Image 1 (cartoon, rainbow, N blue to C red):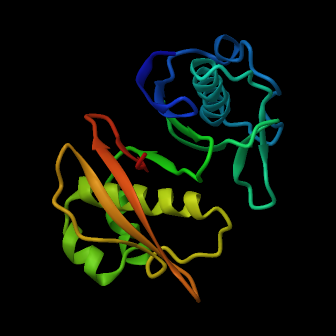
Image 2 (image 1 turned 90 degrees about the vertical axis):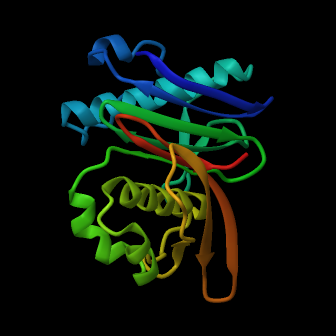
Image 3 (image 1 turned 135 degrees about the horizontal axis):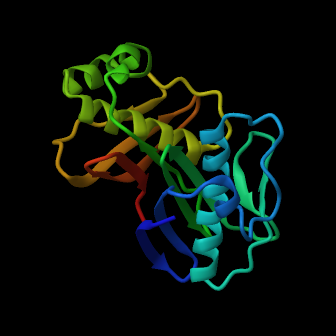
Length: 207
């Protein structure tokens, strides 16, 4: 399970990306808990295990003992027995994770595919569609950014096309994004970072 990226932003904050190369028995070593029975797809099972291994790795780097992952009523994950915020993402064979002691985090990893152009009108505003054009990579960055903001918000119930908005940007290999989470009585501005890798796009909470 090669560690593709590891970045520690502080004593209790960081992010990482893994590339899954093992089978299920190899990757399950040291994991607390087992894959839920309802997950029967082989790749999904490997993603579940790899995400736990990645969080375990981050905990080890930060001097935390890993007791597993719990979820709140909205399905948002947290570290068991710790107040830390975590976020997970996977697009086989890659898995990404982010952790922070103080603030909500979001991370999303996707592989650019043409299907993003088909779903774009349902998740992007007219301004975002105009800015992305037919560039699949840029569409992927927008998609990841919206997923990241959805995870930061953490309580669901948001429409991607008009409540999770991303300001137009000039696409580079890496850069920053400005997102706005719009709710009925408030707007929350979030700063995100993105990376365009040969195999995937990664967006995460700026720290």
